[in-house]
Image 1 (tube, rainbow, N blue to C red):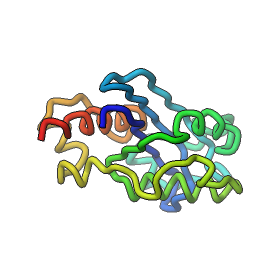
Image 2: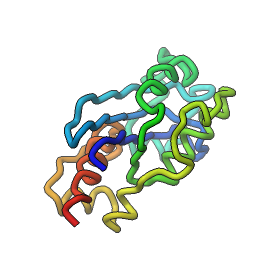
Image 3: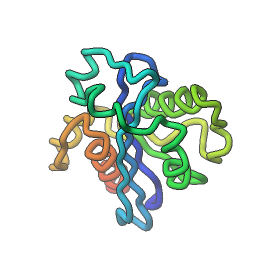
Image 4: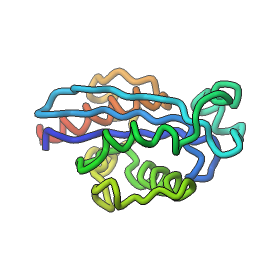
Length: 160
């Protein structure tokens, strides 16, 4: 399938309802037509230091950023009715559903599958290894870079 939307989340804590960044890449007919990325203020703007070490996003960076429910209309318009792809499908889907639940938003309003396409399942390796193998540039744990890499990996699936 050459028309899809790739997504990646970063979280502030181990809790899946603590989204602090999202990257969304829209692909139509095999071409990237839009890239969207934003920081998100997690609940109570609370972070676990291990997560900060992974992605570098800090409470100071999201203190004046809107909460998920305020950003959600921009996210929703990019996801409604689409085929969704993520590298770690179970993780990213869980972050979306649990964050939506945190704000009383209904996942079924998105009209997307309960299980998404997963480039990890397709290629069988971590995002970093896959990108190295295919020569895809990656700034790992930057939500937009991860979503772009995922989109490119999903496009490669047609080569198999």
